[in-house]
Length: 460
Image 1 (spheres, rainbow, N blue to C red):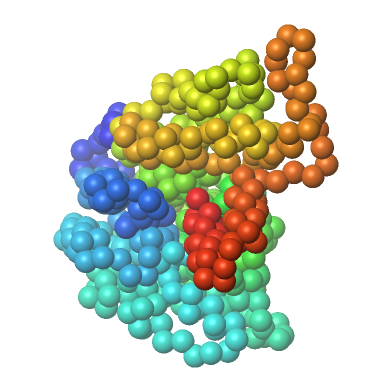
Image 2: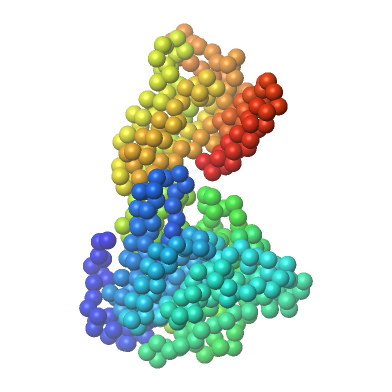
C-alpha cells in the first residue's frame, strides 16, 4: 500500500493536533467479507482469496495502530458467513487484541452476511436470543471485551402504531470521554427481508443530550447508492430524506455498499466505507480500501480513503453481432471461429491478479451458440487469471429461418418477437430428451439431471 505523504506524521504531531483541535480520530472499515470464496474455484485459489481478504483487513488495523487513532469502527459484514472457520475467527481475534493493546476502542454492527436470518423472525413477534453464538460470530469477541458490538437489529415495519414503531427503534448508546470530548455512539443494522426505513422513527436517547460528537454506525441499503445485484433487496432501505430530517447524529458511518462515498445530507456527514476487496463486478471502477477520519464538533477535519492491495477488475463486453462478423456457414472450420474470436479479445485482459468478467449480449443463432466452447473459455480463465466469470444472461437466440446471407457473404439476422436465453434453451433441450425417453426409468433419470441442471444454472 502506498503511503499518503499528507498523512505521514509522527505520533507526537498527531497527538498534539488532536489535543489542540479537539479532534476524534478513527479508522472506518466495512464489508470485509472474510471467508468469501468464488463458487467453483479450485482449492488453491479459494485459499489465496481468503488470504487476500485477511490481508486487506489487516492493512486497516495496522494503519489504525500506526496512526494511533482513538476508534476502530467496523460497519458490518466483517465475515461472509455466520459460521466462519477457525482460521478467520482466530485472525480477527489477534487483530482485535492488537487494537486493544494499542488503546484503541473497537465498535461494530452486524451485516447482511454475518448476522443470522433468525433475526428477521422478530418481525413476527418471536423472541430471539441475540446472545446466541449462532446469531453473529462477533458476539464472542464482545463477551471477551475485545469490541463493543451493537447486536440488536432493526426490528422491521410490522409495528401496529407509532408508539410501537418508535419503541422498535430504541437506540442503546455508548457514551465515553476522549481527551475531554464526550462521544456517543449507536449502531443500527438490518437483516435480509426486513422492511421499512430503519431510521424513520428514531428517538434521541437521553444519554446523547450532553455529548459533543454523536456517531451512528449503520449497515443498510441507502437510497441513491444501490447498484448491481445489491439492488434486488432494498426493502430495508434508508431514505435520504430521513437522514436529512434527523438531528441526532452529526456523523453516519455506513457499510453495505461496496464503493466509498462521502456526502453531506442535511446536517449530517454520511461516510460509506466501501469494501476492502472486490467481491463482485457491481462497482468495477471503485478502489477497495478503508477510511481514515478526523472528526470535530463543528465538522470533518479530514476524510481520506486509503486504498489496499487488491485484485484488478476487468470487464469484456462482446456483442453477438461481432461474434458472427466475417463468419459464414460454408466454412469448414467455423466451429472454432466464434470461440477463437473471444480468445483474441480475452487474452490481453488475463493475468494472475485479475478478475475478469466476460459479458455476451445480443442476438445469436442457436447453431452459433452451440459452437461456442464456453468450457474451453472457462478453463483458459482458470489457468491464466485469478477468476473468470462468464455472463450470457443478456444473450438471446434467433431461429434459423431468420438468418439471411447478403451478396458480400456476411451473415445477417432479422429481428423476431419471441426470444430465448441460453439457459432456457438448455432447459428446453432437456425437456425434449425427457419426452423422447424410451422408458420410465430413463425419464426419471433425465428428470433428476434436469433438476440438477436448473440448480447449477442459478449459480452461474
